[in-house]
Amino acid sequence: MAGGGVVDSKGGARAHLYEYRITPYFIFACIVGSMGGSLFGYDLGVSGELFFVSFPVKRGFSQSSASTEKTGLYCKYDNQILTLFTSSLYFAALVSTFGASYVTRNKGRRASIISGSISFFVGAILNASAQNIAMLIIGRIFLGFGIGFGNQAVPLYLSEMAPSKIRGAVNQLFQLTTCLGILVANFVNYGVERIHPWGWRLSLGLAAVPSILMFIGGIFLPETPNSLVEQGRLDEARQILEKVRGTPKVEAEFQDLIDASNAAKAIKHPFRNLLKRKNRPQLVIGALGIPAFQQLTGMNSILFYAPVIFQSLGFGAGAALYSSAITSAALVLATFISMAFVDKFGRRAFFLEAGCEMILCSVLGPVGLVSPERALSIRDKISRAEHGGLCKYDLHSTDCSVFSRGSLSSQIRDLLAVCGLDLHHEQLHFLAVAGDETGPDRGDTFAMAESLVLEEILWT
Image 1 (cartoon, rainbow, N blue to C red):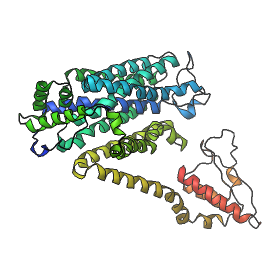
Image 2 (cartoon, rainbow, N blue to C red):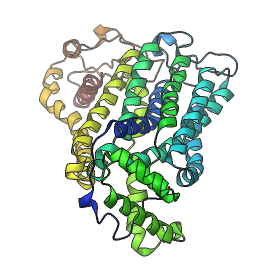
Image 3 (spheres, one colour):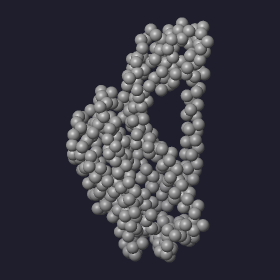
Image 4 (tube, helix red, strand yellow):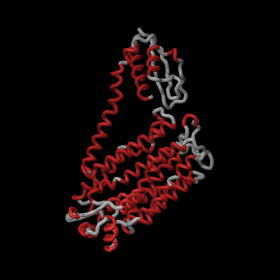
C-alpha cells in the first residue's frame, strides 16, 4: 500500500472546520482519475465474453470442432495453453502491484495512473493485432500491468481528492466506472458477435479508447495534496488544495494533512507495525478478510463467465450476451444506490446489508426450486397416464437419442406442450421408458417423471 493513510489520534481533529465547494476542477479530477476503473471493467467484460470466441484456426490459434451454428462465436478451447489468456493478466496485475506501490508512494498517484494507461494501451494494441497465442498472452501481460497500476492508484487518488463529507460517494466512482466498463463491453460484444472473422479484434482493440482518454487526462491531472505533502512540496500542496476545494479557507484540512504525514513518517517499520497485536484486527478483518471474502463470493467469476453460464442454461449466443448485459446493468444501478447513501448510513451498514442480502439469496434460491413442485401438483396429472413416462435431459451429451412424441404418456405430452417445451429442441433430450400403470414400480417411475419434468420446466 502507498503511504498517506496512517494518522495519529489527532489526525482529522479539525474536520468540523473543513470547507469546500464542488468545483469544475474537482469534477474533472474525479472523472479522469476514476477512468482507471473502466480499464479493469472493460477488460473483465470483453475477456469473459470472448473466452469462447472462435479465434482463427491458424498461426497458433485453436478451437474445438463444435459447430458454430450451435455456439455462435463461442467455442471451447482444445488447447490448455489458451487458458493463459485468462490467468496471465491477473498474475501480471498481482506482480505489478509491488512496483506500483513504490511509484505511487514516491512519485505520486498521478505517475501511477499515467503509467497504467500507457501499459494498458500497449496491451490493447497487441491483443487487437495478435497473430498467434504468444502475442495474445504478451498483450494480456501488459494489460495486467496497467490494471495493477490503475487499481493501486485510482481508489487512493479519489479518496485523497474527495472532501471528507462525501468521500464515500466519490470513492465509489471507481466501482461505478468498473461496472460501466463491464456494461459497455457487453454491448460491444453483442454488436460484434456477427462480425466474422475479425469481430473479436475490434472488441479487444477498443480497450485502447479508455486508456487514451486516461493518458490525455492524466497529463492535466493535478497531484493529490496528500502526495505533495509526503514529498515535502508544501506550498504546491496548499495551492492544489485551495483549487480543488474552491476556497482559500483550507488551513484546518492542510494542517491535518501535515500531521498525518508526520505520523506516517514516524513509523520506521510500517509492515512490521501492522503485525503488532493492536493492529491485527484491522489487518486480518479490514485489509485481508473483507477483500478476500468479497472475492470468494464468486461475483467476479460470475461476471467473467456470465455468457458461458447462461449458455449452459440453454440460452442462445445472442441471448447469453444480452442477459450478461442485464446483469451488468444491475451492478451499475446498485452502485448508484450505494453512492447515494453510503455517506449517510456509513460503510458498516452497507457491509451488513449486503451480507444479509447475499445470505437470503443463497437460502431462498433452492426454495424457489422446491415450492413450484408442490404448487403445480404434477403428480395428479401424471398418475392417470396410460403408460409411464420417464423424461431425462442432458445439456452436454451429443449422442442422446430423441424418442418420438408418441412414446410418452398423453398427460406428460400435454404438460410439456402447455409449458412450451419442444421434444426436438437442441437442448432437450427425452428418453421414454415404458412403464406399466399397474406394475410394482409404477410409483417410483412416476415420481422420477414428476421430478424431471418439473426440472425441465424450471430450467428451460
